[in-house]
Length: 432
Image 1 (cartoon, rainbow, N blue to C red):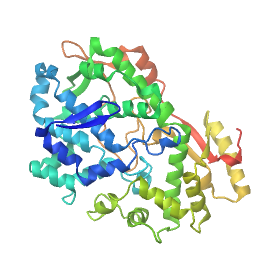
Image 2 (image 1 turned 120 degrees about the horizontal axis):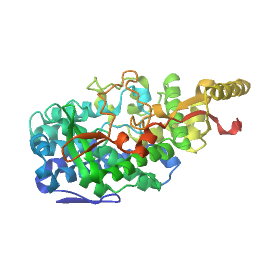
Image 3 (image 1 turned 135 degrees about the vertical axis):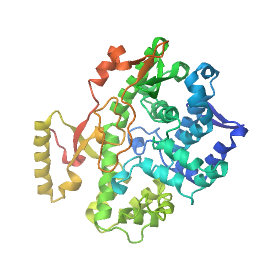
Image 4 (image 1 turned 180 degrees about the vertical axis):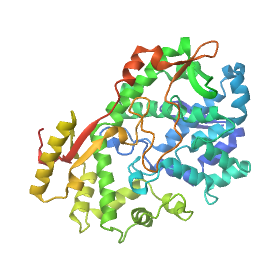
């Protein structure tokens, strides 16, 4: 048995007979996740948020394993016929679900125009990656099955798809607990032991769904949803986090605009040139070289670049001179603030595109369609969307929508987390 010490789950262990999981952990693609922070730039606001996507991936695989290996599942007919036989597939998919993530959380997706899920499945399907070779070495066609679970198209067992990606899944359960602990924010804490104990598989309109026991699970379901609500409001949408993420997006856009390719690292050069595409097998090697360290190195280079905008944005990120974030109360307020900022930009002779920025936090990567306004499509980034409900199952197997059973959750769902701000250089000292 191979064990990992973990601040969230204490011990994460995989048995020798699950050597496939251990082999996957040792691949270069999974080890790369050690060099990518789970929360991107949130450590600017929360200095303790240094945890990586590697440890999060271990946590998700651990939770999946715990659910699947719980003896209580043995009396569940749906588990026996539609889940148990796919145990190793589910754990492998849980481990690899974030393997395609780029650095700085989701900000890099604004440059590649492709979601990390597409990179994940492209890496799994590519014969040149170690994860593909390990999966295919286990069983021919296994890599394609893992890719289908992650992109939510695996037909033989919709239940394991939902266990990994739904309104109540192992991915979200781990990152809420982990992000809450590592940021020091108590908002995301809930009793994960009880959550796993009362978690149930059921059927809604002929489709398998992951839910909770109606009698025993209502309180933990409320805790779970409220933790999501507060983590999005106070951590994922924190003004300093968003200010840093917006700066990264603008920095990369400017580097691309001024062709800041000279003496640049090959992976960053191809990123800016727009040649990194999941459809291009040659782009796989370059994409895998992208991690947090490479982009910070690029910023050090750009800090001496001839272009004043690129030079300034790089220095701001390197030395934490972030933009001021101004909360907007309504559309009229937004127009008034924008007008004032554009006037100042003209007076200072700076380009408004890079210094007067409207940010709508629910369109950031951390959107959660259960507690924010649903957004089914964004350009070419559409994926099959999970159910928008959290279900409670009674003893007869009937499903009850949590928001109809809980006035607390109903109130949260009717109060969407949408944060609108204008951002500009802090030294402008705007008071509006």
